[in-house]
Amino acid sequence: MSFFSVRRIRKSYQKQIALHDFSLELEEGGQLAIVGESGSGKSTLLRILAGLEKQDSGEVFLQGQKILNPAEKLVAGYDEIKLIHQDYQLYPNSTVAENIARPLLLFEKNYTKNRVKSLLKQFGLEKLAERLPRQLSGGQQQKVAIAAAMAIEPEVLLLDEPFSSLDTIQTHQLIGELAESFKKGKTTVIFVTHELDDALRLTDNVLILQKGKIIQHGNSQFLCENPKNQYVARLFSPINSIPGKENTYLRPSDVKLRTRGQLLGHVVDSRFLVHFNSLQVRLKESGMIWEVDDPLRKYQVGDRVYLNWDAEKELELSS
Ligand code: ADP
Ligand code: MG
Image 1 (cartoon, rainbow, N blue to C red):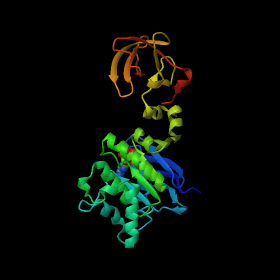
Image 2 (spheres, rainbow, N blue to C red; image 1 turned 90 degrees about the vertical axis):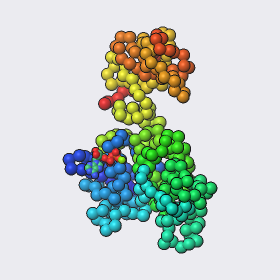
Image 3 (tube, rainbow, N blue to C red; image 1 turned 90 degrees about the horizontal axis):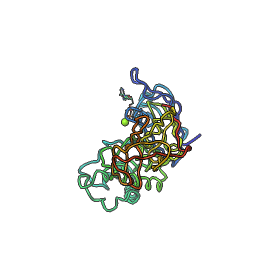
Image 4 (tube, rainbow, N blue to C red; image 1 turned 30 degrees about the vertical axis):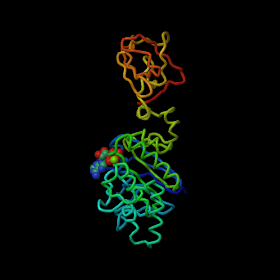
């Protein structure tokens, strides 16, 4: 039996199915990112995994112990499983070190002191230990919240889009730092998000959720190259439909721009992005608009261009 085991969880709200038949196995120290659009059932799942919400059927086991839901247990939730979300609050009048020590109030003083010290180090917060939350950036505050949640050494950490209030740069930096800390501490983590890019910065173990169903679970590069359907493919990049070839698509980065070749079109829009120009090309025959990358920044609006690609880059995708 694996460390954390989720077996055939089902959940409906009134007539709305939130989770179909969700199963998962996670090893100790393993990390998993669950990606799905808003409403796909991510928060419902994490609340059930934490024992904070009652499922209709199915079971959750941590190290062979069954996680009881609020209908089965007097005080809902477990110290072993910590759920953190965007609105996780720090104590405003306590310093960083005091916030991290809070969950340890009943522990022996020396232990608390050492534990706080080691968490400050693990999360790179040593220099901020004496600051109050309002003297920290949003990203630093979230890091303190996560360090505090780790104080009593939970077996599993569940992160429910905890970075939604941060800007992209802060988020990317924080996720990078957390990924290091989690690896160092061998923490078992499930991170849910609607941003694939955030997920990939934490781990390459990715599960795609759509309307409460697992669509695909695997290594991120495998998913990018072998998406099971259009929804999975579009999480990674836009896709272009190949005229005359049903359900067959190409990514903008797999299209090559040449002066002769397969498909003729005209550039109708060009946007400067960090690593390439993103072109909109209107295909001559079909009138379709394709999005293609121009890494050499060679083409301008109005230019004629031929689009080419290798057959093995074609993606066959159901809707
Ligand atoms: P996500 O976190 O991926 O956005 P949620 O788990 O919050 O998804 O919601 C999944 C589905 O269940 C949505 O359709 C949502 O409207 C519905 N839902 C969530 N919580 C409740 C609730 N307490 N009562 C009724 N419907 C709910
Ligand atoms: Mg949610």
